[in-house]
Structure formats: structure tokens, C-alpha cells
Image (cartoon, rainbow over all chains, first blue to last red; front, side, top):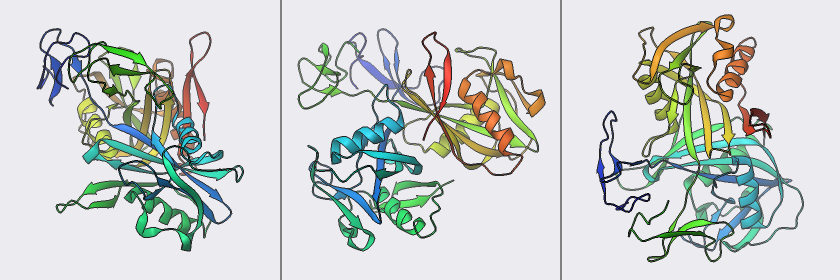
Length: 188
Length: 188
């Protein structure tokens, strides 16, 4: 941010009075422009012993496999975001079974939520952001071609929890290691 | 938003090519400025059979009671946000026991998270955004003076779940009724 979205004057990046961290502040009108983490909502669409994955048609991770998901929009709920993204990316209709896992990604200012879900029918297909959409049994999942660590971690939990039919909420952080690898760190 | 934060030109509010909803788009450089929901993180700081509440020293709901919480910041985790806000608003140190409830507030583009927690000591007090901080037993809680519906709802769940020592994750939406009251609607 270089200019004030309200009055077009230049902004400074400094600590406002009474605050403890730097913010973008308009040099003219004085407005403080806060920036906060964004929410990504995904689903884990299940059918029998299979899970629906999408092959990404967009960057980052073009050609890698992921669970359907994307940025939560204003004026919607997390549940609506999960249904919408699953419809958009996999042309699929699902029923939700509650929040199953969530991950903080503080290095990119994001929080990712995963909802467990059932496919309502087998009429699915690739949306504009997917190259291909398919159902996978545990052993058929392209484990080495998964787009994001949180997706792989959630799939591992899912296939493990399926054995007992108990799905406790899983919380973790995805952090960057000193050599720039993304590491899953379980959290409270 | 009236002006582009990147180049200071005027922005239009219209649907970008390939999108399905209106965004702020710069008329000059073409940048699309997405706006997304923000996360508020709160704690439920418990000690024996009591919960710590803060009397608000700021609007909205000046003088009403709330659980400590506030907007999640960039570069932190939801857990760090819960610890920080509890320290800032109630000068209190807590240990977290996991996500306990969450609420979508689509009419104000927010998601509120509540972490169950234990007070680590009784050395607490009012931070700059609180008039007063106190521990309350269930029967002493100022139920008619609670600042936000999600706070009241979480406190009700907590004192009910305490009886069985089972704390399942609670999900709900806070929606506006036609006559402008905020209603709690349980969700998946």
C-alpha cells in the first residue's frame, strides 16, 4: 500500500499512537488501514472409501492435487464458502459434517479451514481452476503430488480417523523452516 | 475504497473478467483489490468454577461485559492472537485448551473464534480497552449486560459442558433478523 484508498494521499508505515505495531497511515486524512489474515475454506468430499481431489489448473502448484477450496468471501459463512468452492472447483454438491481441521500459515497471513463432507452424487467434473477431478482411495492418492502440506496432513488424518469413525478437530500451524521448507506443527 | 492503494488512480466497483462478483478495480493499473472477512479471536479464561470477563472501555458496547478478544493480526497464529488479546485486555496469562466455538457474522464480514483456556495465576487487571476485569461464577455473570451474542452463547455452552467435562466444538452463525436483532443460528 502506497496511497490512501480513501483520499489518494501518500501513506506511511508507522506505529499509530496507542498501538504497538506498524500500520499504513494516511499522511493527510490520518486514516489507519489495518491489514489482517485471510481465510481459505476447503472441503474433504468423501464417497464410500474415497476422497475427491482436484488437479490445479492455476498457480501456485499448477498440476498438483488439492482438496477443493479457496478464499472466503465477504457476506458469506465458512460453511457457504466450503459449498461454493467445492461447486466451483469440482462442480460437486456436498453435505458438510463440521469443521475437521484448521491450520495457521503466519508466513503468508492465512488461516485454512477444512470441512469434512459427503458427496451428494457422482456428477462432478473440473471447474475452470481445475485440470481434472477424481475420486481416490487411500492407496491411490498421489501422495507425492499434493499441492499443499495442510491438504496432505488433513488427508492423512482423514484416512486414519476413518478406521475408528471418530473425527476429532485437528489444529496445526504450517511454518517455514530455516531452509524454507513448510513444516506441519501441531497446535492447541 | 475510492482510490487504488498501489497507484492512487480512481477505482471502480465492478465484476472482473472471469469473476462472478463485484470488486474494487483500478481504472488505470487494473489491479483488483479483494476484500475478505476478518478473524476475531477470544479466550474463555477459566479458574475453578469461574470465568474471566472484561467490561468494555471502548465502543461498540461500551460498559458491557465480554470475553477478552480482538482482531487477529498478520504474522501471528490464532492461538497467539488469543494469548495476546487476553494479555492486552485483561493483563492475564492463560494456557489454551483448544478451539471451543466459532461464529460466522456475515453481515459484518467477520469470523469469531473462542478458545477454552485456564488462567495461569490470579494476577490480572484492566488493560487500556477494559474498565474492569473480574472472575464470575455462572450465577454471578451479568447475563443481561453481555456485549455480544456470540460471547453469551459461548458462556452458556461452557457452563453447560462443564457439568459433563466434555467440550465439543460449537459452530453457529450470528445473523440479523428482519427487525435488526442479532440471532444465533447453530451451523454445521
